[in-house]
Structures are given as C-alpha cells and as structure tokens.
Image 1 (cartoon, rainbow, N blue to C red):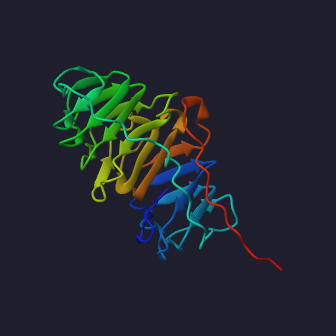
Image 2: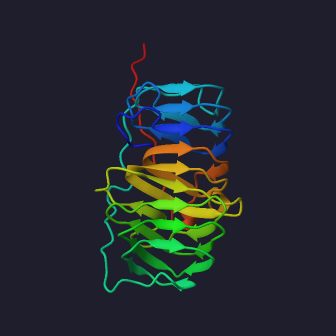
Length: 256
C-alpha cells in the first residue's frame, strides 16, 4: 500500500524484479495518472491493482480481477490506531553480539553476527544499519525509527527478523515516526534474508530491493511510496503469525 495522496509512481515496480502476490492487491492512494507504475522488464502477478488515480504498465500484469481498478476511493491507514513506543532510559549499548530492547540513542549500526532479543527497539539520533556481511537475527522484535531515523540494509547482509505474534505491536516489524515527513528506507539483503511482519512507514518512502519476503511469504509494506525492484513471493493470510489482514479500498460504481 502506497499512501501518498499525489505522488507519481507512488507504487513503482522496476528493473528485472519478479514479484508474486497471492491473495493480495497493490493499492495506491495517489491521484496521479501513474500512481501505480510497472516499468522495465519487471514481472508482477497480483490479484488486482487498485489506484485512486491511474495505472501505467510497460508490460502485462497477471491479475485475478478482469482489469486494474482506477479512480478508486483511497484506503484507510490500517495501522492508524498504533501508538508510538516511548523512548526509555538509559541508552542501550549497541556494540554487543546479543542486543536487548530499549532505546539506542545514536542509531544502531550492526555488523558481524548479532541477535536481537524479543522486545521493542527505539532507534533515535541515527539510522538502523545492516552493514555488509552482517548476519542479523531476532524473533518477536519491533523496531521503531524515532524522529528522522531510517533504515539502511546492505545487499550482502543476511537479516532474519520477525515481529511479535501478540500484543499491541502484533505483526509489526518496522515502524517509522509519523512526524518524519521526508527520507526513504532501504530494505536489501541476501536471498536467505526474511522480514516477517509489516514494514510501516506512513509518511516515508520504502525502497524494497531485497530478493526476499518473510516466513512463508508473510510480508506487508505500507508506506508513503513503495519502490520494488527485488524478487519475492508474498501471501495474504498471515494471521497465524500475528499479522493483520489489510482490507483493500471499496469502490462504488453506477451501472445501468
């Protein structure tokens, strides 16, 4: 879901990406003529494309619905009720092989083998970075990017993180500060990487470059804009992993 109300190419599929969405749709709230755009040699299989504006496709898209739906009603923010986690004291030490939940006051740059213990990680004063050749893992993890913090993952990093399966932040893996109105977040990684949960950046962009999704294909991306140039297989029903079903927008049409 791309939430920006006016950006061109708000949901962009490019390069030689190969994306298969089973039981899922791509939704853009933008009213631009190319609110959803597929360019280059990108290949997309999806139940349906739904746009508040238009759709621009350089090659055919395999869909279940008869044709893309345009001029649709914008979709509501599926995580509008999600509170921002508060910062805590003292600041945590990020130079360890096993990290604990809490606030990381100068960002969090990870390299080598690192395990994140279950809980909420508040990143401020810098970005969450996965350096080249980093091997990062953790289950039951929520990573909140406070203020202007963002995400940067190197393409040679292996990142296997999953969201909690219960509680307030059930199914949410990354969460960007709503007050951060600029910047983009880069998710890249090796073919062994797994991001299980929602990547929620309501006012920022997401560049999804990695050739991976989540456990069993369970990944959701909700951002201001979404650019996808990696390969992934994604499915809809991930409730067993604590993820929400995100409803597509409804449309009203007059028929004779």
